[in-house]
Length: 214
Ligand SMILES: [Zn+2]
Image 1 (spheres, helix red, strand yellow):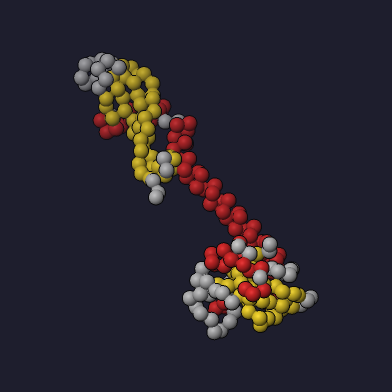
Image 2: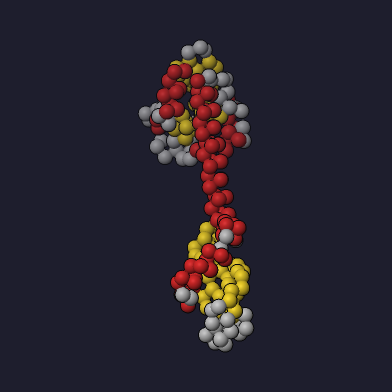
């Protein structure tokens, strides 16, 4: 379940003189600001509005937002809201940005590593493969499987092809994680041979989805 919604926070301002209270005619007020923000799991994610108000020090009458003269409201805004009290309202957004950035960096690093593995194959490398892009007569629903490098020469890899295929790569990853892919019985007895130069093309076309080296 995702918890999100709108919340508010009041920030204290300062004492101002000279404005006359419409209720008691006192001429001293305290300013304040209201920050409304969107929260995700109670973490302020971004600001949705900034409103200011004043409260009479004598009778506690408050004037908020449009009840104030626009010029006065503008002036109070510049004194009440600071980076210190508004920036934390974007914590969630900043956090999300950092996570996205880290994700992108990790994905890029994975890609670079895959490229190296493809260029220099090693015995037992596992390729997560989209079978529909490798073979003609495959089940288009269950298209993700494994190819394992059984042996290699300077120009070719000898490949074992998994008997099992999944509709998602997560099924394949689970088999790899649980080491099911280590057993010869996981693969068809018929071997195929691929030129090492061809592997790069297969990676670029998405036939090889990713490379796992354990
Ligand atoms: Zn008053």
